[in-house]
Length: 105
Image 1: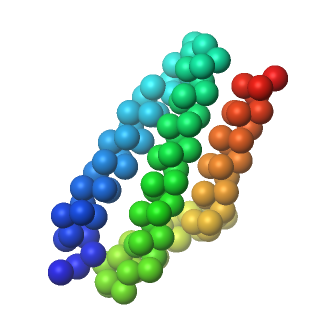
Image 2: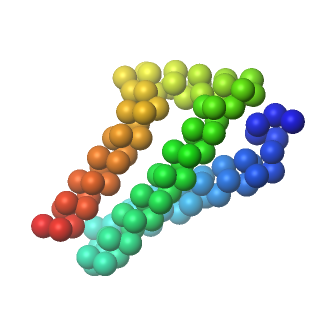
């Protein structure tokens, strides 16, 4: 069975994508949140980022051809912006850290 044929992998990928879409939609109102709402939003984004990082590491470590092609496609796509997958995650974390600092000030 290929990596992406696994029901567990499919389920987690769908859940990550769905949660991401919901958080992005919710985030469009971020400026209207009170301090606690902003804190909760940041925590949810951090949790989602960690789930995504783990999922992508599983893809990276898989020996499955389709998984390896997926990583190559991601690397090519991000390379157009001068980024690696590692840098992408770093930038996401930096953004969340900046949001936390702004919340504390």
